[in-house]
Length: 147
View (cartoon, rainbow, N blue to C red):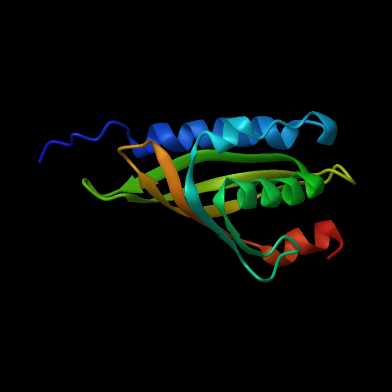
């Protein structure tokens, strides 16, 4: 079956990752969320594990912006590295296996560990509709954040 989708999941994810890196690395007073917002559906949903200080369900671009602000208050580097994207042809869901590089804003401590994300993408509109991250070592993240 030949896909007639306007976008590829990889292109949508790459745009999101580029915008996320730029946002997270910016000083709080210069953060511009518009790059991330451009990759999100109006009803996008992000669920963070309840074990983290930025836990919760975040909906819509405003919810994702609230999460991004909380996350970037903790980290000045959030870099998803070497992503391997697994998708089934014709499916709007993708799984990303990667490594994540984090740097704690307050201490400069750097962390690297395996990371997994499950995305649902609207391939016609080129937007993310759902995101669920899975951290390898939640205890280490919490310890680094003093949580």
